Each structure stands twice: as structure tokens, then as C-alpha cells.
Length: 378
Figure 1 (cartoon, rainbow, N blue to C red):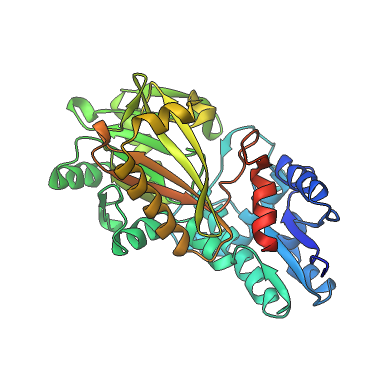
Figure 2: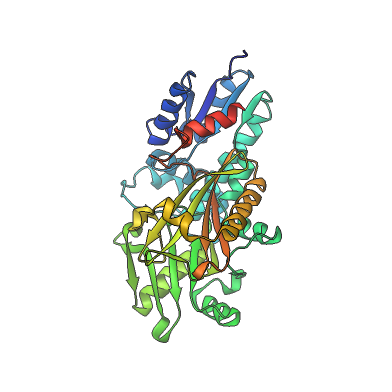
């Protein structure tokens, strides 16, 4: 029986994503992966070429939760950000800035730096043709732009929430309000297009005196911060400040459609597709329209979900998930899926290149990472 190629992980050493994947490799009887730190790759991408062109699997994991990596990406993105009209921070002062938990520092600049590093990865991978890259850097780049994915899915006939195309001249609060009036949107999600985990997201409802919004964003003494609490903002100046920041940094704006309910609470799903097939589903319930588990949502009962969703609607939604997975060159894709109120249809909200951190979830006795390793080896 041939020996399985070893794994290489590009990730943050010590992060739970890496340690949990290493544990899954050991359970599969495989040697631990060689880990290359994101910070090292961002600063000196030729570190990849120190490894020989021998057969191996390459897993590109999430780069978040590391202050050093964040600074490295910000430095790489500075030149591009200067031309983009977003908030910027110059490389020289970055190292002197204190680490402030939850601070949102120049997210567009950070994203532009991340794109530069992904380009570096692609260039080095072409010099290592025997490496099997499980998620192509170009696919990861696409999945980190909600505007790209929403339009791609719509073009493929996959149901998505109606969205606005705001040009540069209308990317401000009054332009947003005019666009919503023209489109007939009663409420809209304004999402930082490169954000994840509900970071830099607001649910906006226009109205008298500027309207109101729900968001986890707040402004502190040194800038913008994400908190673990969703708050309602009604002061017109604060509403416009949040919207202006999100629109200036580049946002996906889409209609907030009413979600179906389970047990009285609204819900949506994270569906993890592995090798093109829906493999795991997490039901996320909340009293609020924002269902993320770290923002007050909770895992719903999968049995109750299957009992409530009409079979035809469930099959149609899973087919949409397959179509999303086929649209990206990735072993796995995390798909956020909602059902319309009273289960009259479904919508794909967005997709995530790193949406597979689902601890405690099993299928046929296998964890998510066990399942991914098995499918990679197949």
C-alpha cells in the first residue's frame, strides 16, 4: 500500500486550528505536518522554497488571531492602500502601536497585504509542481471578497440576497440610503467585503433622523473596535460614522431578508462542503438577525432542523451548496445558508475559505478535520 504524502500547513503555530489538525493527523496514523508560520511566509516567501519539490499536501489555514501576522499584512498592503482611498497606517509606526484586543486597524490595507502574500504563495507553488495544494491561493482570495462571490453565485443561478452596486461616488451614507430607496430595501446588511466572523458588519434600517443599526462595531479612544456584544445604534451621527467607515473600506450591501424560525428564534446554517459535497451542518439560532455563535447565537438542534425544513427545500439548498463548492478550487468551503421565512426558498449568504473550525462536530465518528484528511487522501 503506498505511503500517504506528508502534510505542510501554512498557519499560526500554536493556534487551535493547527493543533486540532495535527491531532487529526495522528488519529489517522499519519506523521504531524510541517508547519510554516504565516508571519515568516509574509516577510520572506522564499522560505517555501527551502522545502524540496517532493510530493506533499499543502493546507493553507486561517491567518487571524496573531498580532505579528496582522502587522506583516498591514506593511505588505500599505502601498496598495494609498491608492485605494481607505484608511492607512504607515509601516514605520506599526511596530510601536500597542496590541489592543478587538481593534479594527485599517482592514482594507490588511486585506490588500493578504492578497499580496497569496500572490507570493501562487508564484512559489508553481515552482513546486508536485505539491498538492488543497485550497488554491486564488480561490482563497475570491472567497475573501463578498462582492466577488455574491455576483459569481448570482451569475451561476444560485439564490443570493439582492445586493446593491454602489460606485465610488455613492459609497457614503446618503448614497446608501438612496440606493436602498431605489431598490425597495427596507433593511440592509452592510458587510465589510473582506471581513469574517461578523467582523465589521451592520444591519441598517433607514428612518427618521438617520435610522438605526445593529452592529458589534464601536468607536474607542484609539479607533474602531469589534466587541462580543451586538448593540443598537440610534444616534444619527454614530449611525453615519459606522456606515461611512464600512463603505469607505469597501462593503457588500445586500437586502436583509426575513429568516425562517426554529422554536421561535431565527436561524441560519453553516454548511461545510468537503470535496464538493455538503458534509457537516451547524444550525445557528438567535433572537437577533445576526446569528454568529460568538455574538449571542447558539447551536440549534440538527434533528429539529431536519424535521422542520421541507425535504424539497432542503434538497434545493444542498444543491446550491454543491454549486458554490464547484465554483472554487478548494477541498473545503464553509457556506452560510439561510431559509426564507416559512421556508419559502433559500439564499446563500456568503462562503468562507476557512469555515471549517467546528470543534465537537462529528459524522460517522469522524471530526471535521478527520473527514477532510480522509477526503484529501482519496
